[in-house]
Image 1 (cartoon, one colour):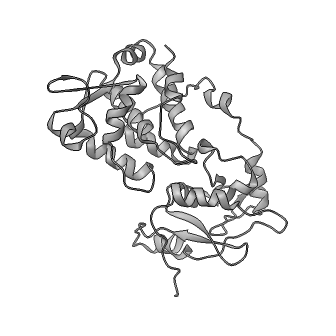
Image 2: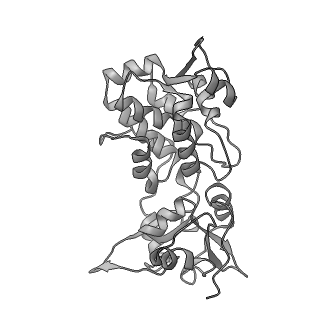
Image 3: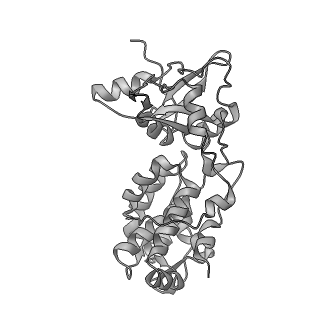
Length: 301
């Protein structure tokens, strides 16, 4: 049985690039718990808060529940659920999941395969990360689910699906003249830029192309905040764009105010004349699938 193929083909609700990472997040969490305790089960009432936090932090901007993946992941052959009354899931109702003692864990055949081939766990986890989340979030997500990954390959499942264009970073940084589009940071060590990255606006995992029209040159801090939905990009008059800051972001330090909150309403730095700005459909995808809540009003101070 090819567990990597099953992992790559988890059945998810999809429509026009809508993010639905519920099953991948649950499977990552289950892999992390298996790594810690291979024989333990995940009682819904005990892990519900953990799963809800994962969905809130790494899921889509709209409100959602972990009850859906807890029940439906069974259909993908990698997960099983039983209750205090026997095998089988009681459904997606919160009352039934909590009251009937619904407990899930990896499918028996998968647990056997992971015991026989320990490196499979890291390969499955890396595949889930590559297919559903941008690289800037991989480390944080592994920490959140308690995963410690080996430096194993995923047998190039993602490469067989689509090849990344390794030139994108240089093209995007050049287009923005090696400056963060949000804050203007342009640090170098000698002639080498440091702390500057090419951010995908529409994530590569969701069909975002490796093109300048889908990229922003961002410093490491603002790249992470952009991928977490704290920062976004909105339209101004004409072809100009402005920085959006989520109302959900809270920071009381002078650093938070200066480096994040004060960005609200600022025009983007770049791209240089003659370079196409970020395409409107990619901005629309980020606004609906990543950006958290409503934007703050620009500071008048």
